[in-house]
Length: 99
Image (cartoon, rainbow, N blue to C red; front, side):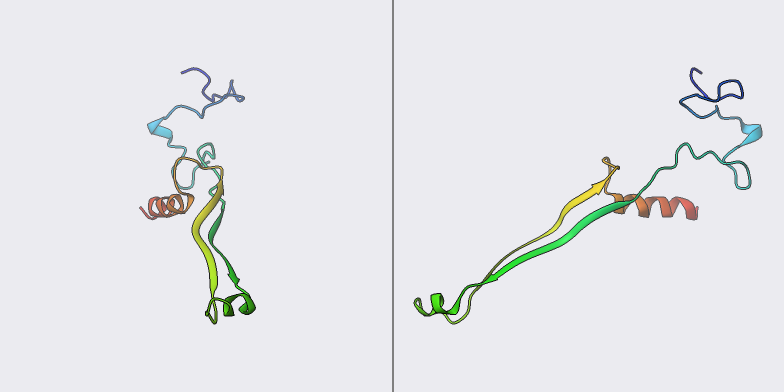
């Protein structure tokens, strides 16, 4: 396999090839961190803008109080992960760790 890690090729792009007699990802072994990545993210979960209209203006049309507002949920997510919702990814990774 081209560009795989070997003791002679330590600057390779990909990790070493699987070897059943020496499972390097087993607990207690020198584990590879190649497939590990950050699951950090920032989310704007909810936002609400509201405005109470002035009572002087409302009295002219016979209304005592009136509030206008806009609200939204899950408006923005900042993450390096683009393929899946990062929140769901954390749940998925937790399930795998429990197996």
